[in-house]
Amino acid sequence: MALENDAKKQQNVKKKPFYTTWWFWVIVVIVFMSFITPKKETAPAEETKAEVVEEPQEEQDPVVSMVDSLKMEYSDLSYETTGDTLNISLHYDGAFWDETDFVRSCLTHYINLCKQAYEMEGIETLDYTVNVDLIDPKGNEVPERALEFSMPKSTFSTYNWDNMKFKEDSFDQIDADAHIYIHPGIRQNLNYSKVFYKG
Image 1: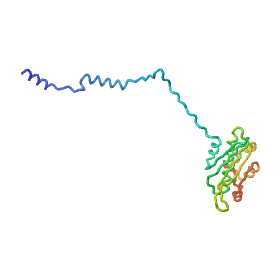
Image 2: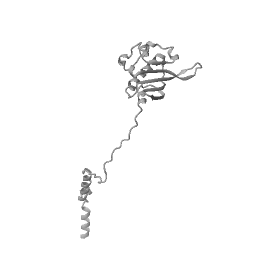
Image 3: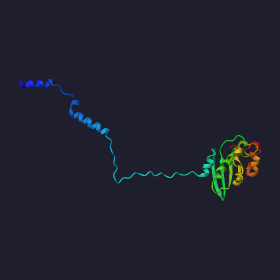
Image 4: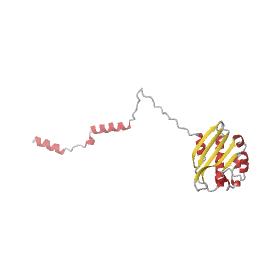
C-alpha cells in the first residue's frame, strides 16, 4: 500500500521544464560570455609584421604618352632620337573628310607634341611625319608620306600659341618659320586660309 501511494505521489508531481534547472542557466551564461568577451590575439614573439612590398610599376614610354595624349587613331608609331632631334613617325588611321581639316588637325597635333617634347631635356628639334593611305592611279590604297613638320625649339618658343588658336591665315607665318611638307595629292585641294592651330 505504501508503495502504491509513493507511485501515485510521483505521478502527481509535475516534472520541471529543463530551462528552470540550474545547470541550463550556467550553460547559457558561459555561452553568452564567450560571445561578448573580446578575444586578445597575441602574435608569437618570432612573428613580425609582414611588409607590403609594392612591385615597381612599368612606366609608360614618354613619347608614347605624348602621342596618346593627342587622342587620335594611329598605328605604326616609331621614333628615334638623333643628337638633339626627336623624330616621330606614325600612320594616321582616323577618317578625314577633306584635306584642309586633315592638315589643320595634323598641324595642331604637331604643335601640341612640341609643347611636350620641348620640355624634355636635350630635345631641340621635333620632326613629325604622318603617313596615310592614299589612292594610287590604279585605285589601290597605298601608304604614303602625307605630311611632315619640323620647327626648332628656338623658333617654336617665339610664338604665343595661346594667341594663335583659331587665327585664320596663320599658316603662312608658321610655314615661313618651319619646314612643312604636304603631299601633292593633299595640297591640290587645300584651303590654306583655313589651316590654323586649333588649340
